[in-house]
Length: 343
Picture: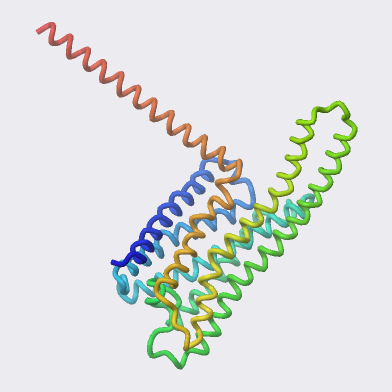
């Protein structure tokens, strides 16, 4: 085994463990918090978490076996099923991210009419469209027999097998339409929604800055350290929205764009994709599944509170069981001493 293959295998294992633990933590927070379940964006978060868990359980182990064996992990039927699942899951996850961005745009730009514009019924309809959109491409791929093992990516994915050169035009059109209606469409929605949110956030920050400066001017006897602290808070407030939006859009581009560009460049017959590069781009797509819980959920205060309370309850129960066990063992030891003295 070469060093690059070893590093890729370790990367897949680490990404799989982190993705499974973090996405299960998100689901655990939803089961334990009625407040999180009452929010409409929770529907999109649940859909995204389920997609990431399925990708972790189905596709990541198959890719790991493909890298380890340097060949098809199992039979053709299994590989077709895994490639079908990959097309459906990745498309559904991207559309869920786009739905979350649109929900945030409506909540920030139209706060007074948010409850009427985004209801649970609307969220469920959006999720239903996401499933239908994803199933359309996955079923088309399955019917055209364009799913199989690709040596360049060491995984079962969308692939035009050997002896199907006559289908190259149709396959190229399908690939371009697939990535255009998933990656490109979602990227456009993310940029549109979050840039609108950023514009509103900056306008609010400017209003707050004006009020703060006017207050500081009126308060003549205020200590200079207090003024410096207020100005520092202003700067942090202006940067906070920009950082969050850069994380939302940047993580999407960083994780998906190398793989999508590689798949599009691969359509040219003269282009050969190096194996290590193809596997690396696949790993970057998998990394998005492990980063989504942090980007959308676990770094937010509501989720942190629920998660901390769950951990606190678990630790309290463990301490209780340990104390009960220690007390019972002490009683048993006392009884044994008493019996020994009697005998």
